Length: 250
Image 1 (cartoon, rainbow, N blue to C red):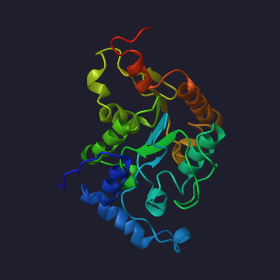
Image 2 (image 1 turned 60 degrees about the vertical axis):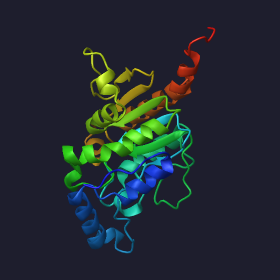
Image 3 (image 1 turned 180 degrees about the horizontal axis):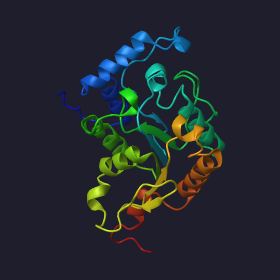
Image 4 (image 1 turned 30 degrees about the vertical axis):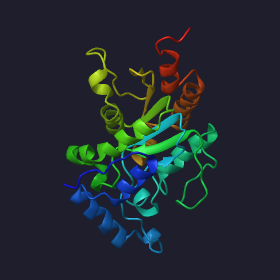
């Protein structure tokens, strides 16, 4: 398996993700989808490669999803872009001041994220939206690097159980948490992690969840209203480290 190169900056992570070939099954699937295309997008030139994270290097909010959609991120080359989940996400980010516009349709549409970074547990579109445990482990170094490099993050919103577990693993939080009570995934659950970062859980805005009413628009907006308040309140992890440094007068 190809080794992950040194990742010293977000640009390094982006390049490494795009060039990644660690999961042959996923790479073959993404290429096949890009070749065959969906009739609705027959005129598109699909991205068909692993999809990097996207956003503000000074982000206070990190949003982590599952994986690019076959005809969403795998088509457009930007995470959560070109599908219904992305429509829900960027509308909410815009509503609460984290995005310059409410829609994300292509990686050249001028969208900017403000104090926010969007990533995923897996960077290739998986068949049936189900990456294997091995594929998630293969992808984890990229999320680990983003968590390490995004030093101003105060709150992480995990979209779905897989993203929640990946966030705990990628940040090394699982091993540092007390044996009980461990953070558990449920919609709206909030945990404070060892460095003070807030971990906020939400159902994923997939069609299965939004069309059935498991996730309503008011529930969704409540998550990002709370994320906005958490991101704006108090010092982030870096600020806490400075505040609590030895010799600092309180």
